[in-house]
Image (cartoon, rainbow, N blue to C red; front, side, top):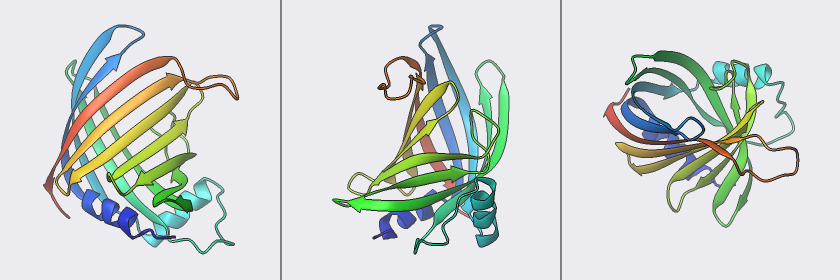
Length: 186
């Protein structure tokens, strides 16, 4: 498996970012704007092990190159609400077809629910897009990051009501869009 382009994507994401987002809450017909400051650092081998242990995820029988990052952010909404969080994320490639990498995306703390979680990722190097799908208790979050260049990312987030097992995603709760600009590197 060729993970070089995925690692390049993560290397470009390291540093400090200023982010402007707009969230559309469709169920309550509300629009919210927010400003976020992100800091992204490399994930150390010790923290990689922590994420694996927290998720009870065994890779001992795999010859896998792991990629990941430490993420800290602070968000202030236009209503004055503040959210701050830090987490560690690890990407475990499982397969590659026609250049597209897919695998598991592990975090020691999820966004929607404060617990370790294993999600799915898909990376398309042709358009430099990382697509992450997470099934939470009540919602399924589909989060896309497109790296336009090393200093600019475009973000799209769609949260769906979690459907019954075997049914497709239909009912959209939230749609978010963001422009993320790097302000410095580590």
